[in-house]
Image 1 (cartoon, one colour):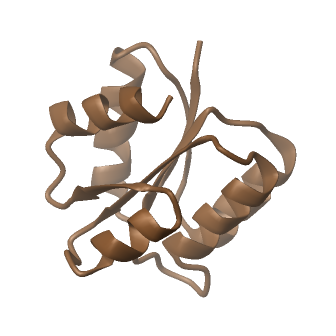
Image 2 (cartoon, one colour):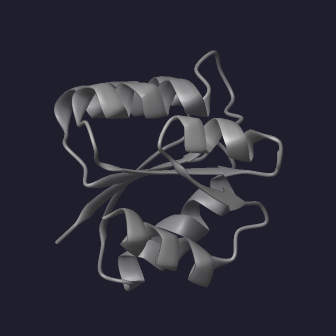
Image 3 (cartoon, one colour):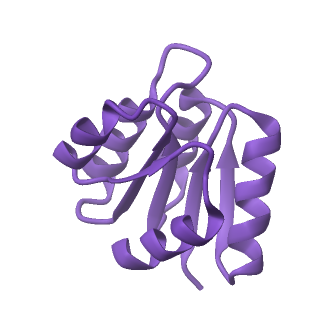
Length: 115
């Protein structure tokens, strides 16, 4: 079973993403902040990370994706954000881009593409 890290500070969005991925057959761990995600990454390995760009706290989505890439190079990365201007930056760090509001079917297709 493929394991996915979901990092989203909005509780409703985090729950929706987690439920969607779980029902699609993925094992999911979620974090409500960048800091929490970095702690999780120290102790667990994931096949992919789905990360919101703007997170509460001092660690943003790009910092989480950078650490994810450092720990597990070449694994799947998806950046989720309402800031469309961040698409180029996401692609520069090797992440696929999913705009908010998230279309769950689109997210699942992109997740399969990065795995």
